[in-house]
Structures are given as C-alpha cells and as structure tokens.
Amino acid sequence: MDHLLVLNVAMTLCAAVSFICGAIKYFKPRKPLYATMIVCGVGCIMFGRSYQCVRLLTGYPVTEDFQVGILGIVGAFSFFLSANYGQMDSLVDDGSKAFGKYRVVGWLGTLLIGVLYVIFLRSEVSAGGKFVCGIVTTIIGLACYFHSKHLLIYDVDYGVIRCLRYYNALAFLYGILCMGEMIALGYQKDVLLIAVSIFMCAVSALIIPAMDRGVQKWKT
Image (cartoon, rainbow, N blue to C red; front, side, top):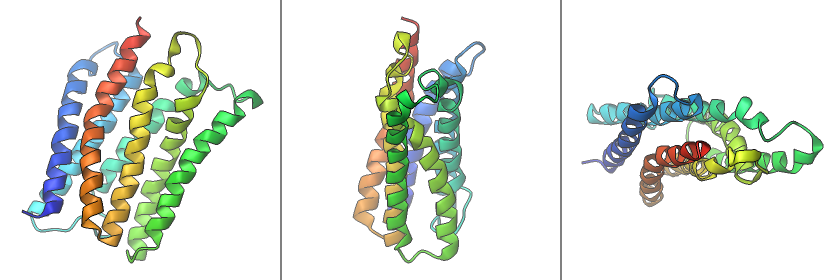
C-alpha cells in the first residue's frame, strides 16, 4: 500500500476519533460557541483527509495544483481563527500600547509560518501549486497570530485565555506541521513526510481534549 495513503488513513482516523468525541459533547444547545468551532475545525481535518484517502484509493494524486482535500486545512484554520478572533481576543487585548509586545509575539508566529512558506517556494512545485499553497499559508498564518499571541499574553480574571494555552500551543504546532508537510511533499522527502504525519496524527487527536480541559476550567 502506498505510504501516502497509509499516512492519510492514520490522520483521518485520529481526527475522526477526536471529532466524534467533541461532537457528542458540544453539538448540543447552550454549549460554548468557542468549543463548537474548534470541534468543527477538527471535523474539517477529518473530512479533508478522508477525501484524500478516497482520491488515493481511486488512483488520483493529492500533490497536484489543487484538490478538494486542501480545503480541509483551510476550513480547520478558518474555524480556529474565527474562534480566537473578536470577542475572545478582546478579553485580553484592548488595542492599547500596553499589549503591543504581545501583538509582536503574535506576528512572530505568523512570520515563522511565512519563513516556512519561503522554504517551500524554493521547491520545484508548479506556479499553480505555489499559489494555492500560498492561500493555505495565509489562513494558517492569520490563525497562528492568535495562537502564539494567546500563549503569552497577560490573562483576565478567571483565566479564560490561560486555560486554553495548551490548546493554542497544539493548534500552533499543527500549523507548523502543515507547513512541514507542504515542504516534505514539495521536495519529495519521504522521511520528513512520515515524521511530520506521525506528529500530525498525535496533535489532531489531542486538540479537542486540550480545548475541552480548558473550557471545563472556565466553570471552576
């Protein structure tokens, strides 16, 4: 069996277990919208990977310029971004100069994603592939701005953001791993791809438990 198929099956299963557990708990009335959005994000990972499994099983490649499975990553980080953007971020950052250093930390996280994309650009992937991956990178970079910012920013009373730092660390790591996968595929580095994929399996399985543990602390 093709190693790329095996890796995608493993990532699908890990994301599916996490998503199903999260859906059972949070797809109910009067549950925190923040948590529901994170569950939806992991659901996007699951659906994107499952599509790629079907595509590989039917003999089609997943490394061409565009295929629908890419939208799984876009959807996941769009949900992660939406969950942290707005009301959640405004709880700890009122836009004043006092929090400027934390915004710099956030942009450093985005910059790291950008540097990884520059490395990818040096590969022999087609111009179309680089453009599509550029769009994916933009979404990941924007989401990682908040993930990295919320890792260090001074928290409000009751530790709303502090409780979610483990989740934000995992989501930020997942963004880096997505870029690592992109690089591995671009340079056709199978060993790197396997290593990155194993970590992606672990992180996708842990994101919802980490988020859930943080949300539960809101009530204590």
